[in-house]
Length: 223
Image 1 (cartoon, helix red, strand yellow):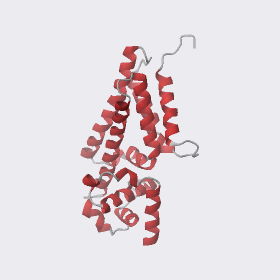
Image 2: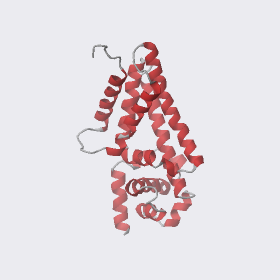
Image 3: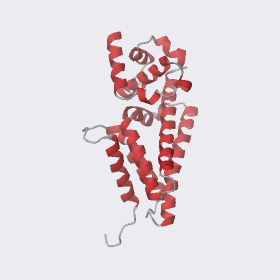
Image 4: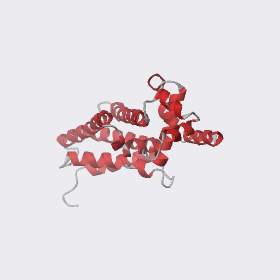
């Protein structure tokens, strides 16, 4: 059993799960805590929150069930830590993408943020699927902390669209609706990626960013 567990966790790490936690040592504690985070993402992705027990997570991490409670108060606390950090990374990714294009106009900034977010969702699709689709499993207090981060991401994209409309770069009658459409499109990548393996995360990011610009661009009255 231990041998299979170790192999399963090694496979999860090879699939990029460990990359999410590699620079969070100060916040996340010792290596055993980060190992539990990797194992928990793998378990939640495979079985869902309600179908996963702390024993499942401990087995995948090669630890005893009691070892989970050394680092986390409960299964929900472990899930919250994953979800919070995942959303913090997503927000940081979005802000960094916009900052990377400096004083560029709204079209370039919209392209940058959609490209970066789509690439992130594809590259970290296992983690993204867990943190996006099991949010109702969080306690009300924990849910609100995560929701606050989601509102910042929404406000960032909405602000770019509003600026583009004012500048005449975008033709978007319903900015709130377009914001929801774009972010929903990006989020959904984690649900199906990689279905055929033909596109890298970077290629998909460029595709979605180009699509976002076409969706927001002014349309000829003759079309």
